[in-house]
Amino acid sequence: MLSVETLADDVVVPDYDRSRLRARMLHIGFGAFHRAHQAVCADRLAREQQSDWGYIECLINPHSTSDLVTLLRQQDHLYTVTEMADSGKTSRVVGVITAAVNARTDGIEAVIEAMSQPDIAIVSMTVTEKGYCHHPASGQLNLDHPAIQHDIAAPDAPHSLPGVIIAAVKRRRDRGLPPFSVMSCDNMPENGHVTRNVVLQLAEALDAGLADYIRHHLTFPSTMVDRIVPAMTPEALDTLGETLGCYDPVAVQCEPFFQWVIEDNFVNGRPAWEKAGAELVKDVLPFEEMKLRMLNGSHSFLAYLGYLAGYQHISDCMEDADFLRAARTLMLAEQAPTLRTTEVDLVAYADSLIARYQNRAIKHRTGQIASDGTQKLPQRWLDSIRWHLAHNSRFDLLALGVAGWMRYVGGVDEQGNVIEINDPLKETLAQRVSESAEGEARVAALLSLEKVFGDDLPANARFNAQVLDFYQQLQQAGAKETVKRLINQY
Image (cartoon, rainbow, N blue to C red; front, top):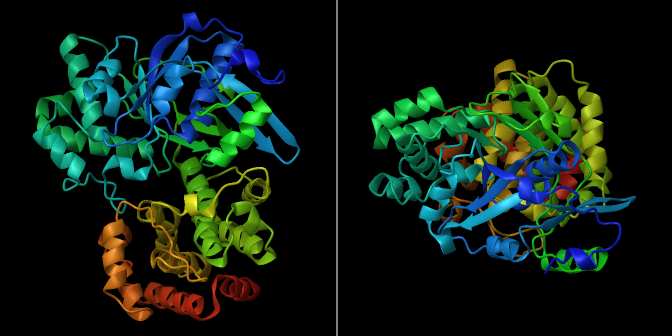
């Protein structure tokens, strides 16, 4: 376990009085990204600005097998973050967490009660796109989702993110406590609007009066977050322990780069995030789109095509000149024209992304990025494809990405190895794959997923033809050769 006394001398430890911290923020989803991003920002403020904004960390999935909360408690709510670069590593201990709750072990009542503490002014979350129980193609609540169905039947013992938020809001309102702001930090365009939609739509199904209260008293600021944070593996934890001087089971590694753009719309105050490197703006959407399409979009392209080609990590893809050129061309030729961003040097931004991808110290697995594709494709690729169809412009790399995803969810890589598909629509995908023959039938079966592609793209002959053409090329020539052919024609 983490022991401050045995840490290496170069590990930065909290030099502020942790007893001054107040539980003013509660975060849902104690994953690696939050530990390396939002919590680090709060730690900087506590260290450099004497901020008293502390965190309560929550896991709300009653079926989760994570023991991170237990481990964190055993370490006095401390953990380490190590920034990894080719030039070296720097580590710090984060000390801004005041408490942690796990719905599976403590009960959902403990989570709702934590959210009802008087000082809580912000409830934030990183639960991935699938945690919002919505239709990615429309951004609306999926009323047929099992967790939503459960919450409609048992609103006082919710399982879903919207249900937990609603239960806490109701309790705070009934106790006469001030409302909080709900801040999504997940990779979705207009993530604040999506969060507001799903919360209000579930509230309307439960209690119209409470829905009206939420509509008029809560705010849902959008954010854009950016930092590459690979999932930790047992091997990475063991190796890191040698550097730290002790084993930290809650440790995370990340790249040095950090970006956080936040819509300044908070109902009950906020930390001075701008003093710790964040940017407060009126409209986050242009930044979200830039990041989602250029960074996340190229990441997904490299994940599916790279995995099929046998590359385990993004940095491995960057050692293939054709994949590097394809990623950069995708960013600038096919994604950049679709953006509403102004006064940003997109060429410099693309080059900075390529440089980050080339960081060999960050072992960002293609298989990790490839997960949950049905939730990611609409905002990373499909909205851009719709733009190109409307403008009669070229989207070959985007179409190749879609074809690569289709080959990936087929469940077998180019070496004949089974691919473990991690996706909320895993069973649906497996059914479509098993019931369709390779080639045109497979493409048609997957394109008919209305939750992903809507009803417009499957009906578009140009889109269908391009995806089918690239799918067949991947079948016949493989990912490396197909990427090479296309980028040499660009």
